[in-house]
Length: 184
Image 1: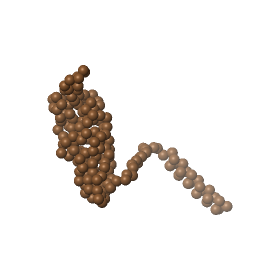
Image 2: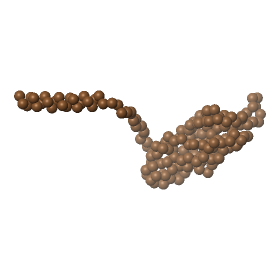
Image 3: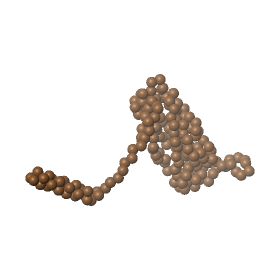
Image 4: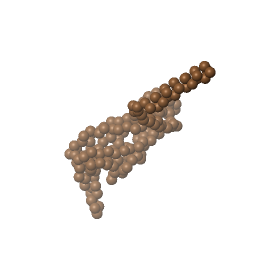
């Protein structure tokens, strides 16, 4: 009898504690989703490089007149934990929505009359869909260096003829580029 009474008392206390915890006020909750991929490559791509935002300067519309270009804005792709073996360099291929000039990325937003170019570490244009010049790598953590710039568009008049400068409309813009790496 004493054992039964003791067991009942323990069960009652346990149920009371459990019930109180289940009715506690929600102090916040959420969900964290972890995503990634396993790649067949000698280097891992840093998360901050795989999905990055490059902040471009505020560029005067005057700088883009007549097909003009903005200053170069550097960005890089960080590679981590590289074990290169016989591979000593890498190239990148950038793709995205092409502009009227298919070598450049179309911009979207309220700004108009310009396109975004991706350049190698020396400032030379990398055409969309083409591989960049190879950049040397080292074991461990390393990076690939690139640049971006805006360029005023040139448009062909209806009926053909010499291209003329597009009207530059001030405003905000964005564009996206995907990249794939190749190791040599």
